[in-house]
Length: 240
Image 1 (tube, rainbow, N blue to C red):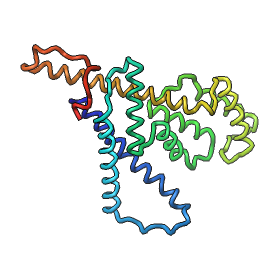
Image 2 (tube, rainbow, N blue to C red; image 1 turned 90 degrees about the vertical axis):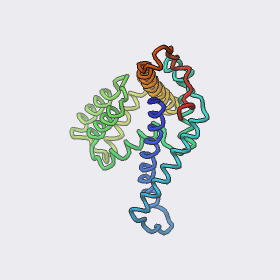
Image 3 (cartoon, rainbow, N blue to C red; image 1 turned 135 degrees about the vertical axis):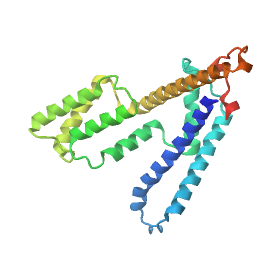
Image 4 (cartoon, one colour; image 1 turned 135 degrees about the horizontal axis):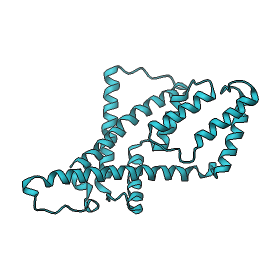
């Protein structure tokens, strides 16, 4: 069925992209290692290793999905929580990034080398929009207002290597966090909320695919007299 194929494809795409990301990220770690640098791999050997790594992660992910029950019911908080837990198990078993970790990595790589605070904040906004995240509390506007205030005070554009200026901006951001009730110690809770939102969106996508597949099947002559089952009664494991 289309929805099961999408689930499998999503796992494979996730594995592929994250193996490459993690390999790129590991370069900087090896760069600072005390051990002698290993001999550079030839192109074909590197591609082979990446393929084998992706294959291993994909098979690990499918192994989890074949065992765990997924209820396609995005309207049910319990089903959403269960699905989020299954995908968390997939990430842990296959050694993949969580959504929060992927966002953090994207921010780190996209903003490296940006000299000024304004371009940095605009880049954060672009990353958020591209990932389909919603700025529910208007935090970006508050951050830009804070930057405007600091730049007005120092009478020049704020550069990220300006320690005094950045300290002023950080203090303004702390005020914003306090106003919104955001605390550093609550970050794990916010990450969990993000993962639940993503889980619900993915279940809605799977439900849509399942309904479309069943509607298409019902148009065939041999299934015309059969009643459509409820999507939440389907067991995804039967289609993997």
